[in-house]
Image 1 (cartoon, one colour):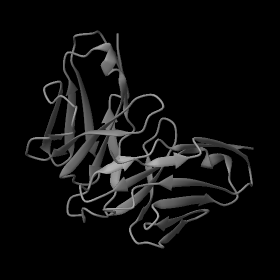
Image 2 (cartoon, rainbow over the protein chains, first blue to last red; image 1 turned 45 degrees about the vertical axis):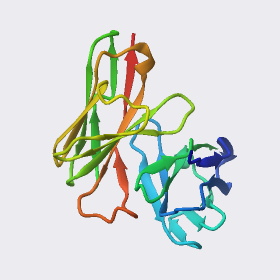
Image 3 (tube, each protein chain N blue to C red; image 1 turned 60 degrees about the horizontal axis):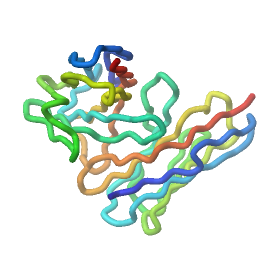
Image 4 (spheres, one colour; image 1 turned 90 degrees about the horizontal axis):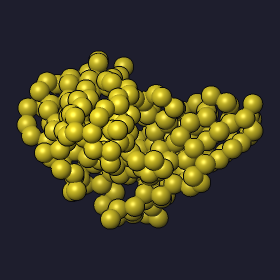
Length: 111
Length: 119
């Protein structure tokens, strides 16, 4: 059974705080690691697709790193804003080309 | 770009009835669409992969006669939950992969999901 773990399960931060969360995944048969941002009542929004060990990607105040050898990825949010409140999902892709999701980190940013 | 719609967003039905959920790619062609299910406090779990013009591939433990999938065009896939029971109550969400993309690194674009409640 392939396991994708995300921690923490939920996180409350104050506006302006920087924060990060973790996604761990199997380190073998790795093809890609996806990050999504999912606001309530909306579609999950694709943030990053990461494929190479050591990859770092950035989109505005959000960035992510990837370590395929040890099987983890970090997502960072700099200077959190209330509009960053959402559930952040990671998903691992192997040679099956299917996405295996973690259960997400729910972020709440207080004004 | 890359918008996927899903309809209905919410449905309540009686036990024993069938419910159809539609998934549409609005501004791109999708040769492959995926259907996921999410139970409370759990992760999105893939139910089946739907390829345009061919039979869907179901994940282990998902009954193909209960969850009928049709992908008759490059922009539409439907999931029909037949003879629904209360244990089928869940959140169903579809995604679409744009035609012609590299399988290993492409992005799946998601619909907003359908909340099904079976009484």
